Image (cartoon, rainbow, N blue to C red):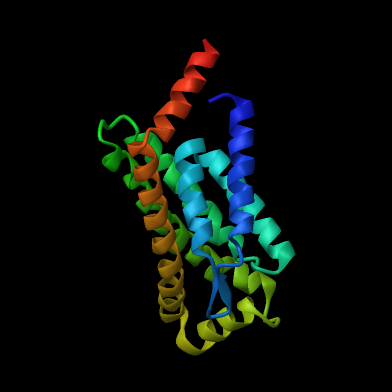
Length: 193
């Protein structure tokens, strides 16, 4: 895929992520947004890990500016998109699309295990005990201890991440079934020759 198409697709996915950003729910002071994880799956598979991270940064930044997100949108979005992109690179040579698109389920690993740990261990303490999500996380950390607080955070983020990953996986399967993805890739290859 050439640079112009990547920029256009990254812009479209970012815009879609921003438009659906009001569909979120509160969990322990953070705003869980399954739509971000849906977008992470699509951008990781269609654009790759670096562009997927860029889309996650754009959507997270605009969500924070609009008040529908918190600073935890960064550790909650970027690792998931990167991991989906890396797993798709490993799986893309498989003949069956169902197997290739299983890369979508790397998103919860990146978001929950990596991003959640970074959010609790690094981001929340660096923000400090101000009001908001960091205060809730730090209170849980002080009263429960690190591991129980981490498991509690992982639980909420897993609900959001798994929902978005399943939606992204099903969307990719449907798009593959109706030839949307293969037509787009074939058209790109023909134009490059």
